[in-house]
Length: 274
Image (cartoon, rainbow, N blue to C red; front, side, top):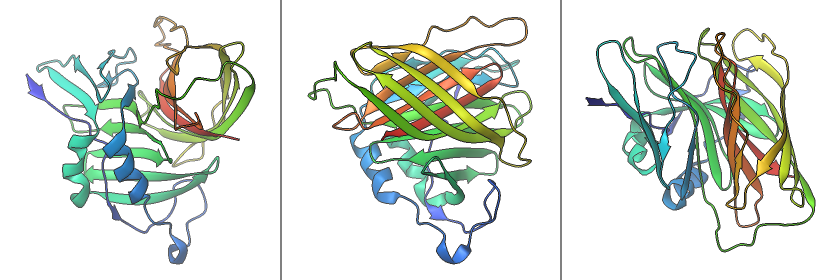
């Protein structure tokens, strides 16, 4: 069995046009959020992963996650692979990778991260968490997955009353068409009712601008370990696989970051409390 690591890691800035519409002014290209990157990988204690989709399969393979990693064995016509996310090991690739700014969505700066000709990730670094959609397009791999790294503060009481709104962005990829998408995220949390509603909107392809319908999750259960889990719909004949899995990050639960699946779309999202 051959081990392949899908690692979320890049460092060197490459100034080029945005894929989200108007080209960026290269004179004012934002600097990569390196301080937040190093702090996240140095202090994270939570990893969330989507299903792993391989070679265009619509039904994903579920990962097993610990506090600092997620991994799974994925099927392959001739070989078996173990794939996963583990934050600290990705630091070895920082020096040879590149950061390309893609523009701002939902108040968050989207970055294209690449470290080989076959690997690309679209991701966002916030103050206490990081989320990305990761793809490895080598001819015999074809792996797509979403991932989140973040810091949970277990010594801070979880709110039992009140409501809060969270705004941010999503990044996603269609596992069949190989199209990347980005859009806005809005989540309304009712701490007293232990539930949330999520709406992902303004979803558009990063290359053509093709738009998708809004994605909504209603009355998602809010669990006391800061974990959010929607009831997963079992894959149907047309490949439908719908779920949302996220956590609250930061000392005051100020970030809500996670992964989701909707039909053949796999994505990750992050939002800040307003």
